[in-house]
Image (cartoon, rainbow, N blue to C red; front, side):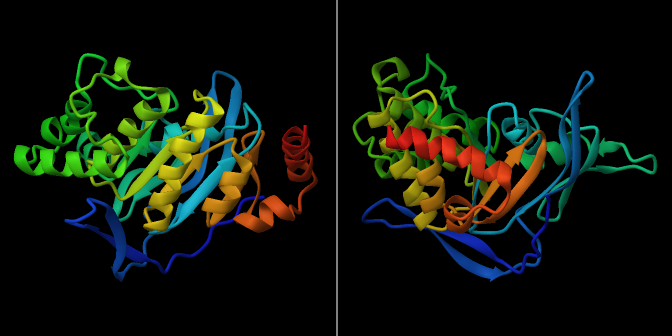
Length: 289
């Protein structure tokens, strides 16, 4: 079952403390548009339909976690939202910017390079395998996109990058290279890199899947801190307890559809759909072992 919530949410203004270097995201003005809206998305690979009429909206300051078994379409949905994949039917918009919408025949038509470029300024993406430039220092990895893509002032970008690295607990690692860092540290650099673009929404694609349990907790602590600061986030994750505790809303996907969604604690603690119950029971059994 798929449903879409109306949004009467607020824009987010980011402020950085000169003392702590930490960013906070506060309500600035009332907005009637969600940060991202995906309506009736359909996506196939060859003859296999992987997204079947998916609709999703995320409001300013909201944290949405997407859970489900492997092959359910979670990562494909995220890749469509972040323009790494195209879809055959449906619409995608970031605020007032339409990226794709259906034509008269019901096929998705993308707005073009300018709209795609603008959209990419509005979101950040953190991959499961870090995707840092191995030949760049930590600081250069964080500064690269704001300088080369956004053409921002170098001094301003460096100041912001250092503040973010401090916030991520990486002060003193600015001149290190990715190979000199642990997996958890590399993922925190990736989060800082995404934040340095000042996005309206952050997407995480299973950000802890490549990490051991101890390093996983490092990264989850950072994401939890961002949620406390009201950063808008969409998180694909297999960490059920984390999703329950950090999210406003959880979406359970299976077979390319949204089976169930609702307030995080209700979905995890009291799922309504039998498929959701079966999926979550396996995680509960694993946690008890």
